[in-house]
Length: 389
Ligand SMILES: Cc1ncc(C[n+]2csc(CCOP(=O)(O)OP(=O)(O)O)c2C)c(N)n1
Ligand SMILES: [Mg+2]
Image (cartoon, rainbow, N blue to C red; front, side, top):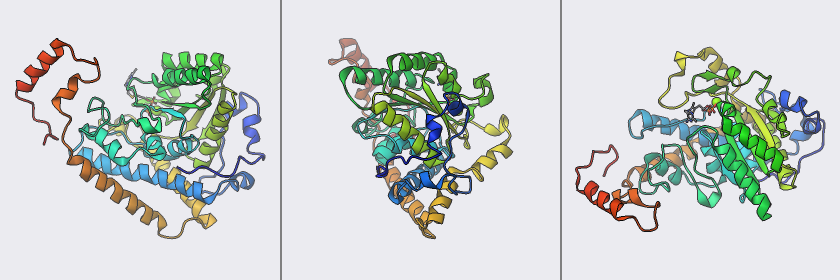
C-alpha cells in the first residue's frame, strides 16, 4: 500500500468540496476526462507517479482475479462468484485513501479494498473454496473474505447492515479517543434499506469519524438505480441527515482518491462523517447466478465496458505522462495472473475444514448436546463435496 506524499493541492477543482452543500451532492467531481486528460492540471500534478502506478496495479489485480475466479465458477470448481468488473477505480481509489489502522466494513464488491490493504490472495481464495485455510471455516458464502490483521471486517450478507456496523465502530472509536476512521461501503440498492437511514442519522448526530461510500453501480440485481430515490441523486440522501455529501465520478480513480482522502482527513481531524456517492456501472452480472441480458439493455453496458472503462482511463493518463511504457500493462497483468494461478493451485489442494469445526466458536466448551450431535454426524455417511479430498 502506497500513500501519496503530496498533500492535496489548493486549486479550483478542490473548491468543489468547499462549495454549496447541495451543489456537491448534485454535481460530479472529476479530475480526468474519459480519454485520460486532466481536467485540472494543477490538482492532478499533486499525484505522484508511484501512487498512480500502485492504483493502476490494484485495479488490474481485481480485473485479472475476477476473470480467473469466474472461469473457475463456470468450470464448477467454486460454487459462486461476484465480480467487480468496471468498478475497480471506486474500489482501489477509496482503498488507497485509508490508513492501515482504519477499519473497513465492506459490502458486496470491495474484496479489492482488502487485497489493496494487504489481504493475501491465498486467504481470499481460501474463503471462496471454504477450505481449512479459510478464516471463516467455510461458513460464509464465497466472496465474503475477511482479514483481521488489516482491519477488514467480514461482510454481513444482509444488504445495508454494514452501514450501522461502520457507524457503530466509528462511534466507539470516538468514545475511546482512537483517532482512526471507519469506512462503510454499500451499493445503490443499500441506500433504500432502513439500516442506511438509521446509520446516517446516528453518524450525523454523533459526528462519528466515518466515511460512508456508496458504489452507485446503477443496478441492485435487476432493480435499476432510478427507483432507489425520487431525488436527483443518491448523495442528496445524506444532506437531509446533516451529513456532508459529495458525488464523484467512480470511474475516475484520481477523483475517487481525492474525494475519499478529503473525507478521511476531515474525519481524522474530528470533523465528522461524509457520505460519498461514487457513480459507476455494474458491467458484469450481479453474480455468477445472474443473467442481466434478461432485464437490461446491454448496449448501454457496452459503453461502460469500453468507452467509460476506468482501467483504460488511468492507463491513458499514465501513458500520456510517460509513466507507463509500451507493453508494461501486459507484463503487469501477466505477473498478477501468475500470482492468482499459483494461489488457486495452492488453495485447491487444501482440504476442507474438519467436520468438528462446525461446533467451534459458539461456546468456550461445547455443550453435551452439541458433542453428541457431532458424534452422530461423524458416524453418518457424508454427502460427497466436489472439493472433498
Ligand atoms: C436485506 C437483504 N435483502 C435482499 C438481499 C438479496 N440481495 C443481495 S445483493 C442485492 C442487491 C444489492 O444491490 P446494491 O446495494 O446496489 O449492491 P450491488 O450488488 O449493486 O453491488 C439483493 C437485493 C439481501 N442480501 N439482503
Ligand atoms: Mg448496485
